[in-house]
Length: 432
Ligand code: UDX
Ligand code: UDX
Image (cartoon, rainbow, N blue to C red):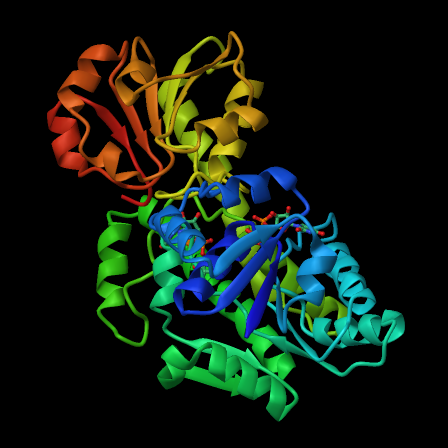
């Protein structure tokens, strides 16, 4: 089977390389020419561990190519994965215009039976819209099917998540579509769940919203912990020993970011509204998450009082470790708040500085440092925003000597309070 991937961003690129690794013939296409040019040179447009090696391997093997030509990609493949972005709009709903325009192009190039697979996270009922658009605009009366195959990739481990999936969800409405997708994912046949399309689309939104809810739940508990002698890390540990709750996604901190959780929670609330179902619980999940930044900056103010003119180091800009992605990263709101208070900022991140420079340009008040040690020099406070491993093994003695004041405010609880205080730091963290 020849497979086309429309939209080679974080999800599309990993899907293209992953399907090639499963032995399929894959062509990726994207509206941004540079992404295609770079991919054909074996340069991944995004940082993901293991991605570039597999990209080079399959370019060399010849079963993976990238094309600028969307029409040609559509007409020359049998199965089309749509992984264009579905950005969040003002009212919280997902902007489906890219999905719609790609559906029209598929209709115009329908030259045989094709299976169109929704890979992007889309609102439930999207497949009916895709079907309607293709029926409306198809030039030749060929059969086609639409299916939903949502992705569960986590940035920083996306390649691993693709090649070692816990589940493959296939939402179909015909046996033909089911057979094609089960064949594509033959290697994972022991963990394929076949459902109808609405169910598959909802599994994705429900899963992300549930995970986001776990995070906002433990962050809410951390607020309680700060008013008592409880330690949120140990509360989470105690809770997680119950296998019904599970250990994961109970890390209290400065909140969740990324291109999925913030958008998917709001999109599901909007979907509920449109369908007349009030998903109030998820509105609270979003509110609790948004409140994390203000709570964190309040800690900075409690430590420094006036922020104007203060030198503050920020370690960690990506929305989580092991990625260069800063989409909806809490660091952006923290930086904007500190800037509005007149602080002078010294920023460092192992991977995300180039991306952040596009959002927070360098200036006399914003310096991007070459290392954590350079970032903290002569500063009045050090903020930890992303829990990169690199920060866990910093030489804190050296850090303390470099700083003007040894004030450390840890937004991801990466340090042990007693150890850090023994070194002479004034230490603040979350829920402890
Ligand atoms: C996107 C959605 O954001 C996510 O919610 C969904 O689950 C999967 O698709 P992601 O891959 O992270 O996730 O988005 P992005 O990195 O922005 O990639 C989308 C790609 O589609 C971009 O490279 C963009 O250039 C491309 N695109 C967009 C097209 O090729 N054609 C279009 O019409 C629009
Ligand atoms: C998420 C889902 O995990 C994945 O299944 C889906 O396909 C896409 O969205 P991703 O957004 O890449 O993946 O990262 P994830 O590891 O889930 O973390 C999301 C955010 O939650 C990050 O900002 C992270 O810092 C935060 N987080 C995660 C917490 O604050 N606490 C936790 O315990 C876990």
